[in-house]
Image 1: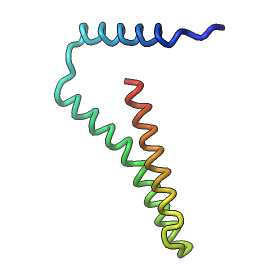
Image 2: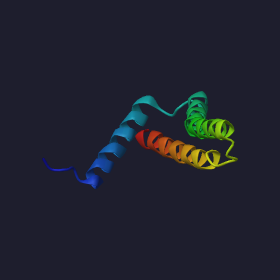
Image 3: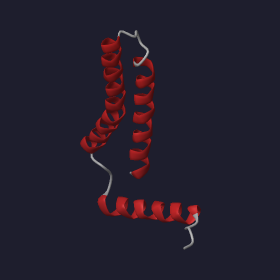
Amino acid sequence: MTEEDPLLREIRLRRDRREAWLREGDMSLGRRLAQIGVLGWIFVLPTLAGLFLGRWLDALRGSGIFWTAPLLLLGLCLGGWTAWQWMDAK
């Protein structure tokens, strides 16, 4: 099975998006704000989860910020990757 040429795939994606735009028109302001809100939560929730999990582990073990710093960084990376994937799918 041959893999599709990336250029052709992007051309078809652009064509489909343009056809959808011509059919549906521009998004409303409310829908745009909702997408921005969703994107923010997609990024913030893993970051906060990493922070709270790290703080809880550090409090449990009395280890300063040994777990907080790496889990916060992991949450930032996971949130950024998830936001990137969500935006790429749109």
